[in-house]
Length: 107
Length: 119
Image (cartoon, rainbow over all chains, first blue to last red; front, side, top):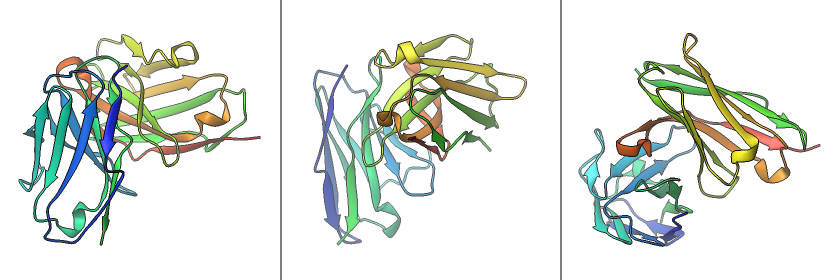
């Protein structure tokens, strides 16, 4: 199985700032990397897939980049609703696998 | 409006069988695939398996011997059964629509049901 390693595990920032979350795959997954947001009491939300394609409804302050084994999620001009957990997931091969998550907290 | 909702017992005894139901609205199960995904407390997400729109199934090899996914299209329900439960199976269990090339993207999720394995 493809192992996904996310960093950092925790991240503190203030509204208006920009942050980046990294995800590294144990082998090349081409461009097939997705990002999800998880918040208590809400359904998980698919933000980005295929590395950089924004899912319908994802604000443009979110962007994704990378290919091969190294990927980055960037959130510019943080809004209060952006704080929560973020997971990367490879969708290149069976079985789909997820990173351990990054907790984005209010500073 | 697409909705998925998981239901099932909150507490299961060790060695027993877990049975969960995912009730889907706004989607037809004959043209959509549904996966089960779980998340132990404080840990990451683990894909468990999928039932494809044609009724076929695929499972994560790590739990394949214990897992069964089925459906009732007339009731728009997907079922998960997992036997020989242990404490490490304690987790939040989610159902989600499998979408995209290969079906490995999950664009609609339920809110999850917490299952605790304990005597």
